[in-house]
Amino acid sequence: MIKQQLQLYFIMGSVNTGASKPLEVLEAALQGGVTCFQLREKGPGALIGDEKQAFAVACQTLCRHFNVPFIVNDDVELAIAIDADGVHVGQDDEMAAIVRDRIGKDKILGVSVHNESEMLAAIEVGADYVGMGPIYATSSKADAKPVSGTAFIREMSRLYPAMPIVGIGGITIANFKPVLEAGASGVSIISAIASTIDPYIAARRFKIALNKEVISS
Image 1 (cartoon, rainbow, N blue to C red):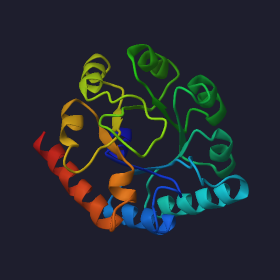
Image 2 (spheres, rainbow, N blue to C red; image 1 turned 135 degrees about the vertical axis):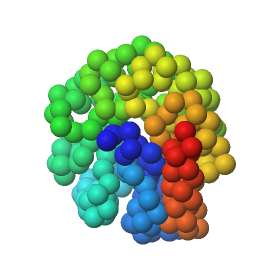
Image 3 (cartoon, rainbow, N blue to C red; image 1 turned 60 degrees about the horizontal axis):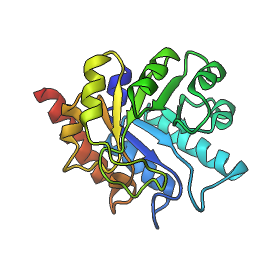
Image 4 (cartoon, rainbow, N blue to C red; image 1 turned 180 degrees about the vertical axis):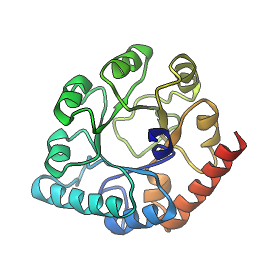
C-alpha cells in the first residue's frame, strides 16, 4: 500500500507557490493525481504558530477529501496536535526513533537517508519509507546536500528491497524515469508542480507518465 502512495509524492509549503494561492495549488495537484502530500513549511516567510496550524489543517482537509496521506515535515508537535497521517524527518531533525515512539506504530514515518548506516537505522526504528536525494540539482531547498544521482537508490533497493524508497531533488517530467529504474517506488516533487502555471496539468502529466512506467515495468 505504502509503495503505491509514494508514487507521486508532492511536497509544498506556503512559500513554494509564488504568486499562486497555496491551497488552490494543493487542490489542483490533488485533482491532478498526487498520491501523497507532505507539508514542508520552512524557509523565509514560512508560517508559524497558529497560522501554521490553521494552514496545516486546511491542507489536511483537502488531502482527506481526496483520500491522500497527509505528512508533516519535521514538526512532530503539529502532526500530533492535528492527527496527521505521518511525519517525515531528516538527519538533522528529531531522531527517528524518538519520533516513532511519539507518533506510534500506526502512523507513517519517513526518514531521509544518505548512506547505508542511516538506511539501517531507519529500518531499525521501523520507518515506513526512506527519502533519498537530491537526485538532481535543486533550488527548492536552501539546505540541500550535494547531488547524489541514482546510484545510491540502486544500491539500497538491491540490498534492502523491502524498504520503499522515494527519490527527491530536481525531479521533472523529463528526468524522473532513471529514479524509478534505479528501484524507487516513487518521486517527490516540489517546484515541478508547485511553481508551475497550472499545477493540475503538471500533476496530471506526471501521473500519466508514472502509470505508463509502472505498466511497462
